[in-house]
Image 1 (cartoon, rainbow, N blue to C red):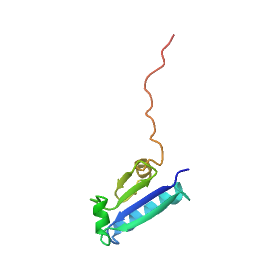
Image 2: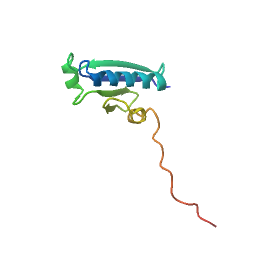
Image 3: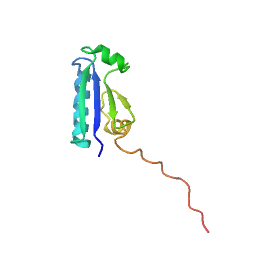
Image 4: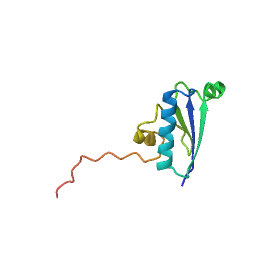
Length: 103
């Protein structure tokens, strides 16, 4: 199993920050238990790091490992979109509408 290295960029202790942290902690404990490291970076306290990572909006979650690097922006309230965005779950394949040929 891969270990996920995650960084959540937030702005201070705003209500949106608190919601994003709560949502991410819940998702990680349910889906990645024992398989993740999470760092929370306040862009007000470390603006250079935010600039280096090209953080344009907060909250922004970055999956550093396993590759590829992925970003999810927002309060992380939609668990399925977060997992899909981080490629934690495989993308469901579309159902084929083709019917088998009769012989």
